[in-house]
Image 1 (tube, one colour):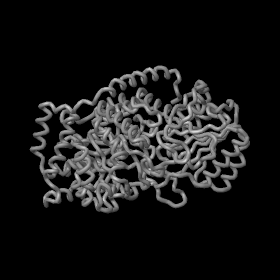
Image 2: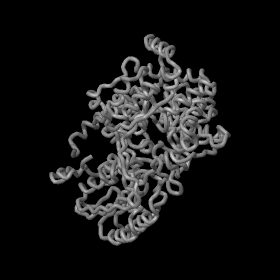
Image 3: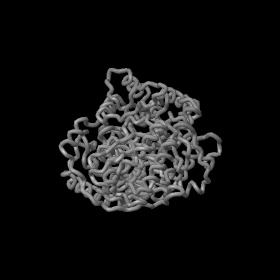
Image 4: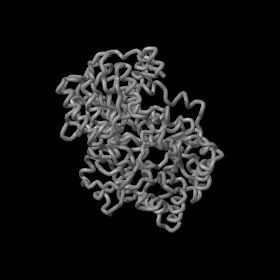
Length: 632
């Protein structure tokens, strides 16, 4: 739908109202957890008294499903129903969607990933809840809002964008909105915020999922999200304990090792977790990382370490909420142990919930057998089950466990929620350098502009194609736009063609997309592509021709492009970030973001050049509207 500029003032007023409310809500101390009312306490006691061993074991397991449309009369729904009725699973983790793709050589560009659908997810959860004797406690990886997994729900920028915007009020409001949308979907636990301190430029899995590298600022923003989630009625989950920020191995692929001393862990990695716990986080997720300072047993991830889970988190930090494992399907654990023994070790370590086992039935049978033989302490299991059941009562699931599908569209993905996400995105844009004073881009409307859409690699972009918003938004402002896509699959001849044609344009804009995607192990541009950008940047500077690079995703890429004359960071991907970047580039929005991380050898924490807004947004012409130009 074309943008409606006349709605801007109304949306700004709504945003101001929610932020003022946020100021009041986050200024007071977090109240102590109130006791359950008598009816709820009676329900908890009755449930605990009647649970069989099978039902207790099931409560320790959280299975999963993808939120594709799923008819009741299908083998997949039958499988999920069996997990509820026969194995008594305590809840489900809701994923996005997927579709089949061929595994072929020479064309690896197919993607299997897509976002799920809110109504499909809620409908599946309602049907599963109806089958459950004990209400299900459902969770989702909503660290970037419900839109992080479900299309049409509100998607917030990556956490590092919040770090660049540096406003706890916005973090609070993002948490509250995420909770409100989650509960409307039938999801009660948000696997967020991420409170890892990203102080390793080569971290291939956390990166922009972290608020930054300053432990105190990470803790403050994480605590604000926790308060927002609580006030919105959902459970916050601090992750990835004891801290996944200083790693250079993706735990989806292998087992990272953090060799810091306990003193260093206390000062850096653990500080944000303490802040989140003080703010009232109800849950913590344990990371698949090895920390010899906590557990000297070689090859032992924190997930399976009693010293880390029970000794440190339960004992030293005094946490009595729910402890989730990270996904047990991740290679750091799955390649080490079969599903059954892995689940047993996770429970023995002190985890309350075994999440996303590769084989829920094998996990169930193994844990049940271990309790029967005494390998797992039955009293510990009872304590975990009581935590889980009490949490369900505190959420009111014993009174109402279904959600209204009719009411959902009025709550999920509203304009008021989008206004907050827009504000975070706008305020996060960071101008690192501008040697020729070309930002905002002063090229006249009739100028010829070359836009290079530069990808790390062309495969895996199933959720959104890079530049799908950036290009039409640029073309709306500079109609004489030529767009070229480059990646690691661009041939030397094609690179030379771009090199030869670039001097013919009045300005060059490079939109650079580099991911740190789970299971990929990649986080760089191809060397020939990076060299081309460097060469074009130097040549443009010598001619005093505007050349501006906008980095989407991994901000550390800036350290490998030192000769580019102008650099903007967004810390994010997809439509909202692309639209915000164009508005900043065109001078329609002020640039105020500050680096929440250091870029080694280039820029320190807190660096950022400021620019005032100098131009109104354009009004799309009739032809532009017909072509969809200017859509969001």
